[in-house]
Image (cartoon, rainbow, N blue to C red; front, top):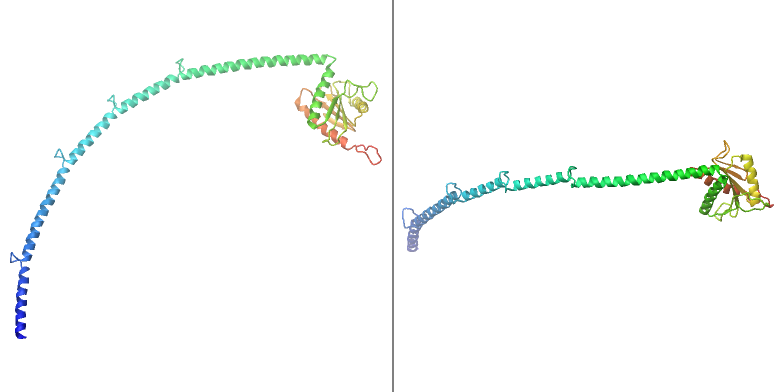
Length: 319
């Protein structure tokens, strides 16, 4: 055991010395010395390479070197600036700004040429001539229309004055009343008949210018209304009521509507009133506004007829 321990101790001591010698810097052949030498060598190469790279980068960003990247960039920037300055300079006739200025000047000249009245062929001058021509034509048409209207009015006035002087004036008013009554009867669904030229129930009596028979949709279907119209200043209310009585008897009508002409109606006569079964209306054949009086008399006549219903004993109840 002692010998074995002594042998192992010698071996271990020898191995220890060998290991320690490998980590000693005093021995140039030791592993640590060789590692340090290699690291120094590699570090030197790295420094040289890094220095070379930095030097290359510095040279690329140096303006002293003609072919450096920065020098080439500056030359391109200067060329672009010179090109822009040249294009936007008015001293250069071929520049973009000069061409645009010339185009704007030409456009302004063209606009001024077309919007001036001093040039006969300008657009504004042509429009002015067209408008003046249209206005002249309208003025001629208006003048012609005024002339025709004046002539027509003069003719109407002459016919009216002649009608006022003529003995047929009353018949003209009766014709106007008949036209109005016929039109309104057709609108209401009633039947109108002109009876002024025919005799009625009374022998040789032609009183009653027209007879209206109320339609099925009226308040009193089948009822008859006699129309009597006069443009005669001699007919006061008393005489008109007598005329209505004769007209109702002659035409066998329940209601009589007496129409005064506004030219000859008695002074103070109401435009529309009712006395028993007789309705009295003042109408102006030349004034459309007075037509409402005849239309209102239609409502009054139907309500009057509607109140005349037969009682159980067969007699007619009066309103």
